[in-house]
Length: 287
Image 1 (cartoon, helix red, strand yellow):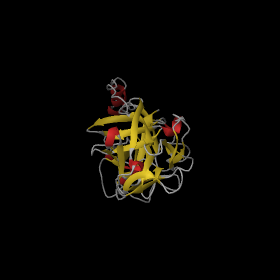
Image 2 (image 1 turned 180 degrees about the vertical axis):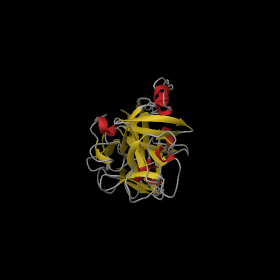
Image 3 (image 1 turned 60 degrees about the vertical axis):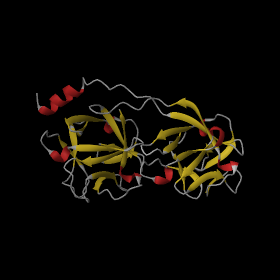
Image 4 (image 1 turned 120 degrees about the horizontal axis):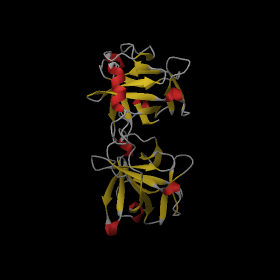
């Protein structure tokens, strides 16, 4: 049995770790208006009568620095505060999505974003940011309604799909050597993670080839070739953020270590210069 085949055999019997509990699902109600924060069709957060609808439910993800991110159960986007409170792609590097719950009177809190405090806006239903004040408009009640499902199982050693957060396409091996295609749960989108130790892994396609690089050349697409146990250019590492998104980094490193999608529906490599941008980030789920 080859080293690569042995790796497949070993990963097939690895037991999944015990799962932690999920995150809180909350309703966010403004004290002054008695209305709830909800998602609108144009990605804006607005105030409306509390109905318990899915658009008014938010997953609270507690971050390591004491802040929280609030993710819509409908769109998967997060509350984003700049001049007003809107929603945007969740990004653990985007400080405008960090919310501090500042304790206030009688069990209420203030929603403090980087740029100010959430309060009813100048247009009916809108939510703006303002300087801190004693006005009831800046007071909110965050009520726990439920809990999300436990986090997805660790994908180490499993068959996975790899989806770009920014393009919403999946890595696919079809007629072209490497493509980004509309996610369709097809065999071409399924890859086996072969674990090598120290967090390193290979991605093996259903056709038996492994994802590798061209030595870090930015202008050449990544390639699929025969899996070679000793080839470091086929080895990858994950860097996972607090919201569960991943950067996929070539294990040998180099000047252009990170896997990224291109506008031509291909894959390329790039350096990590885009803090606060999801271009480098991927969602990896069980196939």
